[in-house]
Length: 248
Length: 236
Image (cartoon, rainbow over all chains, first blue to last red; front, top):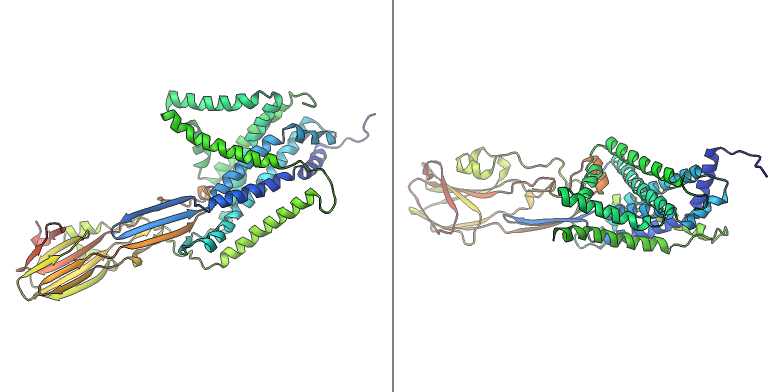
C-alpha cells in the first residue's frame, strides 16, 4: 500500500528529533551525574602557585570549571558513539525515514545536547565557587569579574568544543556500525600513528592538534575551525552510513 | 623510557573515558511510559531542578562578600628600574616616593658605628656624606609586590632598627605568609577573552633594601656575613 502523504525532510527530521529527545532523555541524567562528580573533583583545585621571595611566602590556589568542562566533552563524545548502537538505532524505524533524515536528526540532537552541556558546565562553576566559599578555611578569596558578554562567548566556545567532540564520537560510532572490527582498529591505528609520528619526527601529534584548537585566541577563527571540523566529521559519517544496509 | 612517559597521560585519559562510559551505560533506555511518574517526567524534573540550582547559585555568588577589586588589571612587572641598580648608582633619591616605606634618624656620639644585622638577608647600601651633622639617616625601600595581578605591597613588613651607644641593630622584616584562593574562568573562556593564567601575570620585583647615610668621618664596623655595599663617593 502506498503512502498518501509525502512529508518534507524538515517535518520528518523535526518529528524524529522530538521523539529522540524523549527516548534519549537518559543522556541528561548522566550529564547531571557526571558534572556533579566532576564538581567534587574540582574541589581539589585546578592549579596552584607558590613561592618565597625576600620576606614573603605566598600560595595561590586556583579553582575553575575546567574538569567539569572536560567531563562534559567526554560525555558528548561517548553519547555520540552510543546513538549509533543497535538500541538507539531501532528508534529510526518508528518513522518512515531514510539515512539522511536519521543522520540529520542525530546531528541536531547532538547540537542540542552540546548547547545544554555547555550552559550547565559553565554555570556549574558558580556552584563550585559557593562550595569553596562555605567549606574552605581560607577566606581570602579573589576573582576577576567577567562581563556577561564574555561569559556568553565562553559558553558558545564551550558548546563548539563539545559539538566537535560529539562529531568525533559520531564518526567513530558510524564506522563501528559499518564493521564491528573498527572498534579495535580505530584505537590501535590512532595510537600507533601518534607513536610513529613521535618516533620519526619527535612531533607530539596530539599536542599539535590540541594547540591548533585550544591555542586559538580569535573567537571567529575558533568558530570557523570547530564548525568546519565538525562539518567534515558529520559529513564523513553520513557518507559512510549511506553504505549500510537498511537495518544494519 | 620516553615512550613509557608519553604513555602515562594516555592511560590516565583512558581510565577517565572508561569511567565515564560505565556511568553512561548504566542509564537504562526509557520504557516510553507517559504517566505522571514516568522515567521521562522524572528526568525532566531532575534536570529542571539542576538548572534551577545552577541559576540560583549565580545569584548567590554575586551576593557573597568576595573581593573582585583586589585584582589589578594590567598589573605587570613594574617598569621602574631595579631598586638595587638605582642604589648602586647613587640615584636612590630618584625612585618613586611611595617605595620609601620608613625612615629613621639617629645622632652619633662617637666616631664609629657598629652595625649588627643577625640573620639578615636584606641588602644594605651605605652612602658616606659630608655635612651630616653627626646624624645617621636610614631609609627602608620596598618595590611593589604584585602576584598574579594582586598588589600585596601594603601587606609587607618593615625592618626593626634600634640605635644605642653607637650600636645599630637591624632586624630584617618579619616574613609575611599570604594564602589566596582565586576563582578563574574556564580554559575556554580564558582562551577567547584573553584572560591570563598562572604565571602569565608578571610578578612585581619585590626588592627590599636599607639605605644608610653616614657622616664622612665615621667608621662603619660590621660582620663579614652582612651584605653591605658602599655607594656614592665612598663606594668601592
